[in-house]
Amino acid sequence: MLVVALTGGIGAGKSTVAQYFAELGALVIDADQLARIAIERGSDGFSEVLLRFGDDIIVNGDIDRKKLAEIIFSDQSARKDLEAIIHPRVQAIFAEAVEDLGEDDILIYEIPLLVETDAAEKFDYVITVEADLESRKARLLKKGLYISQIEKRIAAQATPQSREAIADTVIRNDGDEDELLRQVENLWESVLLPLSLG
Ligand code: ATP
Image (cartoon, rainbow, N blue to C red; front, side, top):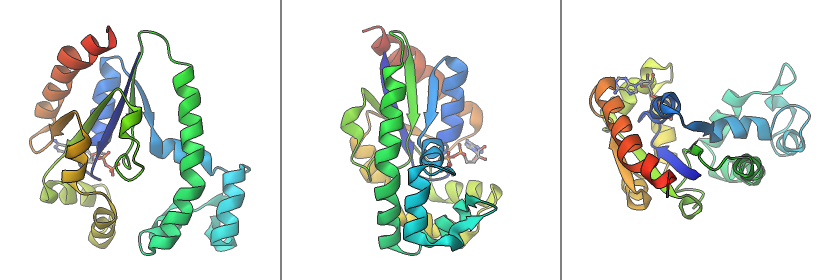
């Protein structure tokens, strides 16, 4: 069993890399998805978010994640409060998933806030996906984010240097998707598979 953290700046290509790993046979878990589960309707995380952020955060019975994102990327103390609600719950769900792993499984955990949550030590191997700022901004604009949102989110994240400092490998995603796939295949064959076999 091998538990790998996959991090990177927003828009650098984490989800694309995770999808390539899944196609090669990895199990993939996305921390953002666990964060959604942590505050889904009816959960105690849901109640805690309401207590902290008020009823205005609810749209059609669910927490409006866009509204929440707008608040926390403009207000650092709100971000810390939300993280204090979400992170312990995400960690508990993740720990359960790891317990269910088989001996030969390779788990790729897509975790944008690896540096920020000081979690690198928990993983057998750490990968960060990095790309130049202009490519990241262009990709995020294409995904539908506004430039003001992009800049706030990038400013709220750890720096590329701090991610690279804790990573075992840096995947550079400055070229096209074929070039990215080649790097992922190479890492899978020459590093992750051998590590998983001990
Ligand atoms: P986020 O932090 O927003 O979740 P991410 O790091 O997971 O982003 P992706 O969603 O994988 O990044 O990539 C962002 C966008 O850029 C996607 O639309 C993806 O298809 C595209 N993309 C990724 N890599 C490349 C590439 N090498 N060339 C062109 N487009 C790319």
